Image 1 (cartoon, rainbow, N blue to C red):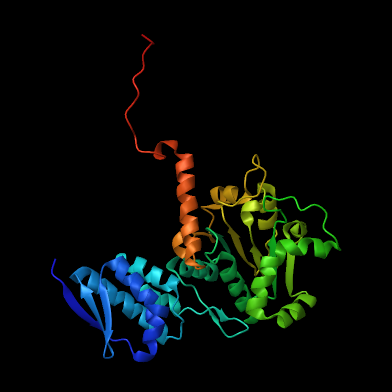
Image 2: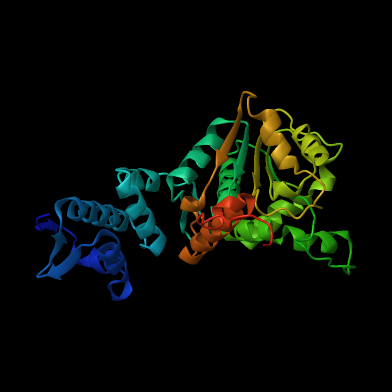
Length: 338
């Protein structure tokens, strides 16, 4: 196929952000699309076959637009732009970036970064109950927390309730010192961390003292009716079916619920079914309940996390399907000993 040359207009003050440190982002684009990207005299040129050169141009234009909108380009942005350009969907990157949920205490905008995250956020806006499942690093809890804080600040709800089952991740921690709150705090620490980052510790503590923000283990939900609240159940894969039913029947008027969990990381006893698994089967046709499944494409942590998630998914597929472990070979002839 003939080689072509294309030009991309990337302003000098955005070029470093788009190209990455030591041109690492451009090198990834070159390696993935088999093109050559050159920057000379303020012009960025792309050399390659017509199809891949056009794809590289669209990737660079998308990254440049993100940079113009004030974003610091990351490897995740580059990887996602490359995956979308193969599906002719790279234009959604900028559309996703327009959806700012809120700002952290440091002024950093909290936005969905992938199409899956965007659909998840939109589902929370439109539905009373949303189940968000997916692997680690897909932003299930953090985005739900940002939506809760936004609803609280806009006075759409009068309080935020965060809960998760208090169960050890494959370890027996034994006796923990202190009062009851001190004993359950280690299990709830990830929820505190997210709220500190979004609200700031002072605002969080002030609202917690007033009872407007509550962080509690799931067992504390029994017997309550939760009206006009934004409720998040985290790590729902570690609930029993009875706990999940108990939680979902606590919901009162004016409330919004987000249930998050990773179906591949259960810490329940082997013979106990997950309440999240059961709820997905039982409630999948109930109106105003939405199920969102995030995948490894939606991982927004370090790119290595995405590779780890993919490696475990492949391992589990092979484990569950032994025939896929190796290529079929010759059958050994059977017969008696001569």
